[in-house]
Image (cartoon, rainbow, N blue to C red; front, side, top):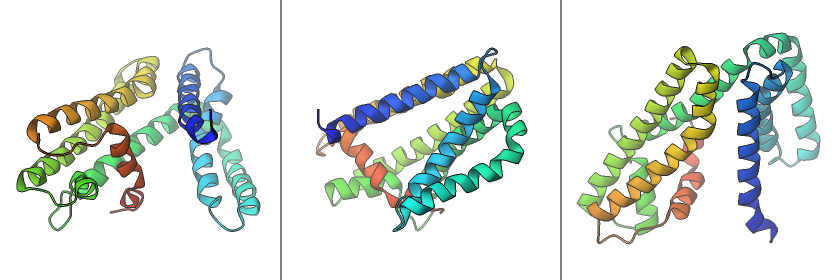
Length: 215
């Protein structure tokens, strides 16, 4: 298997492994050190990836990670006591950012995200397609808002492992189901449109640089 083809499998394995470790860390017998390490791993990885794009990545990546560690060390006892809150903030922050990105694109004078992606994939859109893609953008906005609300509610009211199971093993399958349902509805509502697959839809989503910018 080539490196390019094995990359999705490797990423999926890492994501699943992280989810399993995070779920275990929420258990009563897990060491708090593990939870704290897992909590700081995503932001440190994000910083490393951001800095690695620069011309002096070999120097800046280790320097940035060391700087983050120096900042975190005084806070480490607090992190070990409250690492689950860091999990919650990270997860809800991601889905809330997505909800905001979809929702803001519905404001007057803006192009809904799903409309823009459909235009990139198909060119000109009919009035019916414009209405449909706007409705789908609103549906994704409400979907991600519901994920945030449900996750926060489970964190506050349910046993910690129940919230962890939802966050680590239910949310991503729900997103996949949402993708599949949207495709089924699209084929019924817009039968004359040439439909693209989930992979191409994800590629448009991941390549949309406006998602990385604040509205």
